[in-house]
Image (tube, rainbow, N blue to C red; front, side, top):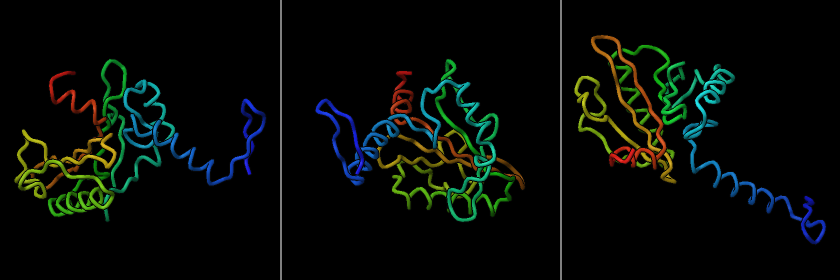
Length: 180
């Protein structure tokens, strides 16, 4: 049993109740602004840079699907007025065309398996040679509608990278409507 001090003295709360309460508080606080892990929308950019520096090793080996490896870089953090507005990560190494196609397919499968809803995809989203550069490649929204994830290939010839960008859902909608 856990003890809490309330206006009527100590109250008892069992562990199950405590964990449920903790989960609810963390869900309310965390889901409102989370971009990725401890990064959150509108956090001071200097704080985000320090977080990136402090966690640099763990942020260089991220998997979003079988056989994929993505990494944060120094330029991953995008700010506006010294506040974090989005995060860009990209494949940990240069990819050939076949690998780039696998990354796109495996990462899409990963997001969909984690209940992200695909809200937009080009007809040829899976082929870097056929993706229209002036349009988004593929977009997902998380189950709580707090996060937009965009995935797109870049490269030419024999060298490609796959990029994933995380946006705050509400900010993304305001930006798309021209309100930001």
